Image 1 (spheres, rainbow, N blue to C red):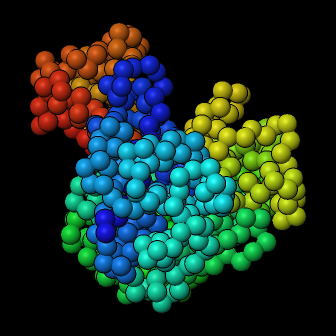
Image 2 (image 1 turned 120 degrees about the vertical axis):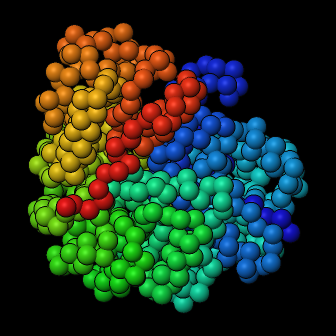
Length: 577
């Protein structure tokens, strides 16, 4: 029996080009399985051309289900992550024609369902005898999906057990059936392979080292944020916020065994715990800290600000944790209490941020806009709150509405007691894709965007100063090129004033694709096409890895020797001095 766990391609073409022959600037790329909120963003890659450094989450539920089903049934199971492959549609469908799988499992959700239903119909045209199984948040509408589309089965929630039932003959809508704690800790490790194991990447919190291993140390979250997907749809069945949400922990021995096997196999240099909430309780966190002390690699995690003692942050730091992500959602306390239902005191969160920064760790904050019932003034409160925190980086996104969450149930019922302030008023913008919602909100007077750096970050200041010092030092021996005149260039210029006269004198020349032909205080900005004739070192200035990776590809295409490129961010310190 041949079985495919498939994360199909998801491309949106922004401009008209024939077929897939379009530059990366013409595309939005989507992330689906592995993301709590499937969404699209401006691509650095293009179909058939992978560029490292874009946000690329590991598809946890699918990776675990693939190895679990293979072990339990003996089937020949393949996990093909076309998002990580940056695969074109032609390549994907050609693979299906060649392999002719008997079962294909696809994880989907509201933001990608309009796209994925076309994939489903196309697969059925190519392989009419193949049984298609849907999983993911869209399973909340399982009966309707099966009535309208050629689907063999829909598995609700996490799908290890459900996939085994389907491969043993079950069909229709299979209700939630979670692994027990004992089953979870006895399960095989998730599926990785040599082609894509090094591609998964999340640049935040600041300080990541590639290749990065993304793992779980737990499943689930007890908190009931109105928009949050996995605790409501995958590790629980709680569409209105009144049900129970379970949390199950992996034992430290299981986590250590997994980390040792995967690090030995793939040579990972940093580890990111992408749990719904990693730090649910001091005992669990301290157990993982002991594991990470023995593993000896730098690590980071997705956390809450108020679930552990302040001294536990120190234990995390001492075991190699260099940074954390913290979810704030709104900077307005009333919104957090009455719309989000996050139960987070923003002043308590502020205290935690200052303590984490005092310990020398980096902090990435996540915030969302466009909540049901949220006013423009309350959104501005969020921006003010962000400005008041010593964050290193922060993420501002539109709040997507996804099936199976309380936010989606609000649309059906009109009111939810647990979310008394939530209202679908005329100000509310319905867009399931948080990336697209962000872009629409940005068209108004609220300037928002994803993954921004804060110029007050001590960590980033050290990086900018290191870049400026390296450039000024190299310029003493001859002309130096700076490639990429963007935010990080100007921050470096502000941190290292000695750099400006070197640019004015022409000892440091500026190159940028978008700004070529313009000038900066009289200094010309040249096109990258002129770099092959430049004899000195070429410094890459963007902080974002995907930008620098794309520049390396351009350098190879232009014939610029790899030895001429200098990338200071690769050598940035992980922990504070």
